[in-house]
Length: 136
Image 1 (cartoon, rainbow, N blue to C red):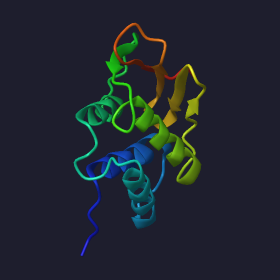
Image 2 (spheres, helix red, strand yellow):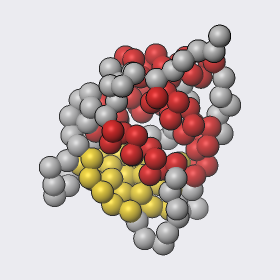
Image 3 (cartoon, helix red, strand yellow):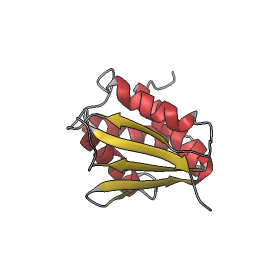
Image 4 (cartoon, helix red, strand yellow):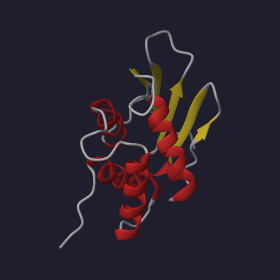
């Protein structure tokens, strides 16, 4: 019988495969699921905006201009939860090049040709996200 994983684990696996060339296998899914559970984002607990965030990345149509939008603050269901999860993946599963430098996040995703920025100094209720083409 095949293992069943949280929806967020499935999305993160796709991101690692397409964005970083990681081969999908039970070990990858199990490692991701362990981290998703440890951040209380398993099952239906991950908020809709997280799936929208990854959908924008995985389905991004490259354009000359950057895409900008806002995400919520907070842990575990806001930006802090997402960044902590991605830092753990970077440390424990596969190097993502995820740089959380305090005032924001810089994250190149070479396999998708994208550069993601999360801006904590944002003029809104949440934090800003910028998706732009990766400069080579």
